[in-house]
Length: 467
Image (cartoon, rainbow, N blue to C red; front, side, top):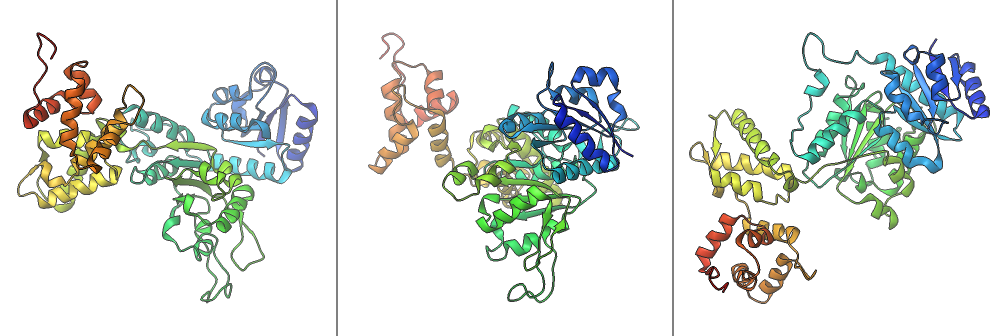
């Protein structure tokens, strides 16, 4: 018999919850505060702790570090949903809104206890690193990636729904895979679905399954992808492309943990964790009626944001070497290396296709290379467009008007080239800026500024009279 500790200061709620759980063969103890719970009971003796978020003396989240490996389920009012999300970030196994539905409470308790019973011992053994942490292919030393990896490790231990945001090609599926592999569901299947690749007329059948004769061509019954992920994780990539009808079905699945095949009148319970990803602004879509607002808030339990490659600094170089070594191994070629100017260009390039573009560019360059040296011309990068993009992001006039790149585009539309505008900008501003400031405003290095001066014949101001 599983033991559960209830920590709730409202007597009516505490008593009602105790009776509900005892009726379903759970052994229950209760307390009105954290002080009472820790003084009367040993927290590690329980299979689950259910605590109200707001308690006299200290919040219920203070139980999370005290409970150790014992999962803590947080109860909160609907008005405190933001606080519930914060509790998940702190390590709560799940949250449930008050006033709670009895069936939902029982279902949540059963799932948490069952997962804990299946969980393997934590921590390294025989001096080896934890295998779950070693599985992830995500690498990165920049601050945004380190924050992402830290948050990922925390959320993976829970069963919370996760929404991964980021531009196309940033590696959102790798994040979903890392969440699954570091979770207690790692031995169960991870089912990945790209919602944009399935025709709108088939998406519901693909996700939820269908019965024989449900529609033209349904010659036999078929289980859906959600059912196939039972016990594991479902990853819905590009969830912003999901039709509204399918969104309604998905919302019910998230709320009730059950699905109903197309053409069926029977529902089936499933135990599936959902991880979703999109490059679109779901909140803005919900405001315009293109995405269900209730589904958006149901997905928005834990948000992980993938930084674009252009904001990852030296991670670009680290990834480049990794992709080059991998491509050499795959093609059976000896180790190759980058020239210095190639590395510098890759570091400053804006990478609109992000990590995916970087990997493809390196593989293409390796195929075209005559020797073991990867030179800049082999990558096929549009450096002029990249320079405009970098300038547009990094520079704005002191007057607050349009950026340098935007202004240069206007000049280009009038027949003036980027070089012409570069020359004009330098000549107009070098009397009030030194070389370092000019280079920074232009979004280039001092060396690049000097080389461009030599190429365009732009004289430096006189040191004697400032002209």
